[in-house]
Each structure stands twice: as C-alpha cells, then as structure tokens.
Length: 47
Image 1 (cartoon, helix red, strand yellow):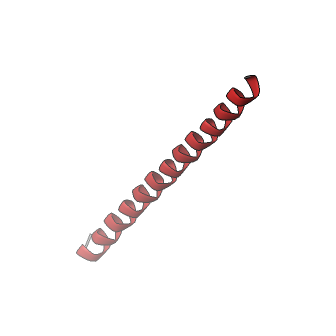
Image 2 (cartoon, rainbow, N blue to C red; image 1 turned 90 degrees about the horizontal axis):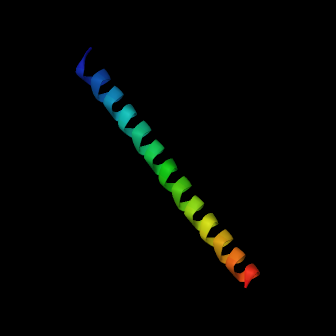
C-alpha cells in the first residue's frame, strides 16, 4: 500500500466519521426541539 492510497483511505474514513457525527448531532438536536415543542404544547393544552 503506497502513501497516497493510505492518505486517501484515511481521509475517506475521517469524512465518513465526520458525516455520521454531523447527522447524529442534527438528529439529536431536532429530536430535542420536537420533544420540547410537544411537551410545551401538552403543558399548555392540559392547563
């Protein structure tokens, strides 16, 4: 395995991990926002 293909595979895996982390973070954030909105609506509705 030469250096350029090694660098390429490392870069690819780094990008893949970064993409997964990014998507997970977005998913968590949207879930938190949705949960907060639902909880707020529920609290207002049951008052």
